[in-house]
Length: 135
Image 1: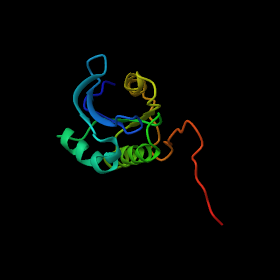
Image 2: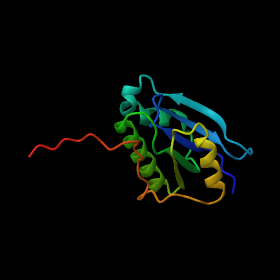
Image 3: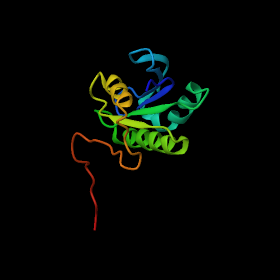
Image 4: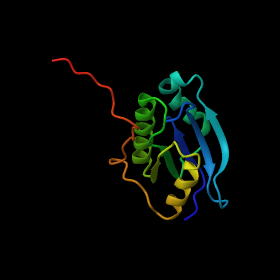
């Protein structure tokens, strides 16, 4: 099934961005792109950046599930993608964002009908979180 109007969320990289793709043309063609600068304000800028891109509900959502960016941005991007996919009842696909071809991999998964369950989609960290609990 071809997909047009696919929302891509990448808050897992050092340059977080959202984009609207057209997957119907045989490849991943960017229709609109919004880079969130500075990256430290990703949490603050994400929803307004998505709102600026969308004129209608996307047919699917793809999201980067892990890369070298900050953990907070990664968790926020995944939460927004999962919530929108659930609320709009559209498929969601998560791909590790450290691969430069992650959007193309997501396009292939979408076309094959390999959707992720929004409730089971988890972030991928390259190392264990450094969390200190004082007792």
